[in-house]
Image 1: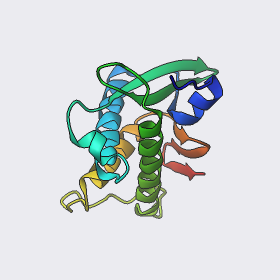
Image 2: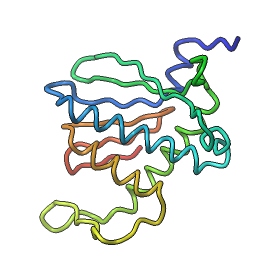
Image 3: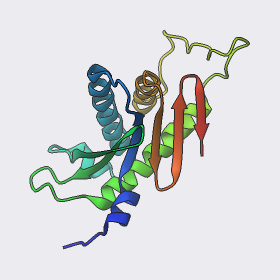
Length: 167
């Protein structure tokens, strides 16, 4: 059995930190649905994980959570669907690809306009790919929260209102 200590688990899981005050359940539910679909789409698009995500049963996305100060932190990873055995390699490869896609997607968005609001993406313009469509949906979901921080292995994307920080 593959033994992984708590510190290593933290490096393998994708984390989403949300400001914990007055979280609407509908926002959280919608975020989790969109996030799961986005991660699966990234998994299908990634050469290293395509075989795992192309056939059912797909890996199960599981979540644990903790609350610290003013944040509710969700930690996600993939497990084998029948045995619930953690899939560390698949999780790591998928989350790495996800963060790279999301970072690139956000960098390519239109810059804020003169009055500070981001200019709208043309609603009738087709998306370049299904992954891009999912990334846009995820961005919209994350913006509904007061503050959302997505992190994996020290890479951080923070969204707070119209402010965006990519480290």
